[in-house]
Length: 414
Image (tube, rainbow, N blue to C red; front, side, top):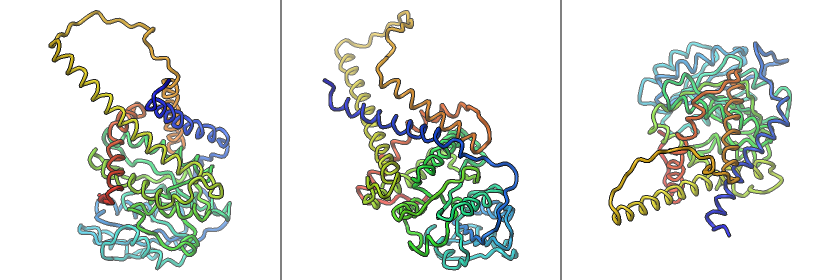
């Protein structure tokens, strides 16, 4: 009879495989609906849009961010750009002041209060029917906004549209691994879009009907994850969110393990605490796949990583302890013997094949995500590096996020 730890392990492996297969089936059912447009996009009409750029100590990137907005293929008289300095202590204010000469640009300076307060200041001054934000470390393709707006034109029930976010100019190993992770995210979010189950409306260029904020209220702190909180609030109120896979946004990502850890700790803390805040929708059919799939999937992922990491640490400790006992008993004896491969010793248990299948499905997600963002079917060695890198460091920010949640400790923004 299998032990309880083994049963838990098998259940978690099964659920992990189930999630990947579910995404794969969703892909095959909807693959013909995935459109990747080339060239310029035209609309029958161009609604006015306000885009807010919240800035806090972004002197290195904000100029290029604003230039990408000014270069959009969208009528300038229909595009309002608000640049909001959220109490920066560097030269951000001096840089954004250079754009005050543009008729469609307004600049604001406020005391530091966090990104959500800067977005809300933009909301207060916005007079357009559509509203969105753009992080000051991100840059957008000239066709991104018009492609996003085409979703609103096609379907009046759509209340928000999120873009495809990918890594801008990766310079080192850590950023290249993150690039593959972002490609995988593009694939998963498109599938969640088909399922009506998107849980994050990312800061870089998600566009909303302003009606969302008129009806549901402004941005909230959301545990430093206002983009996740507003998406959960929309799902709770059954507001439709779409995903525009060919609206490209390029974002700067952490270059070091330390900075990546800080970023993901904040994201994971936000995921855990927003899930707690919206636990009332869990498993309730009227909230659709968001309640039946997305939130449970997040909980399963947290439980799986926590359990498997704990089991690995325990087994490794038990192994070391047994070896120490043997060494104390018989001393150090090491003898090199002739090593040879014997296929008899290959582990053929079914769960091994399930794990391998999961890896293949994740790699497929990365490859197709790359196809949607770069137009290329191409394998990269960084896809293989993704597994050991994130397997080693992800449990640490997850466990720290759980620890912070238990003790009500909020992680730093940076």
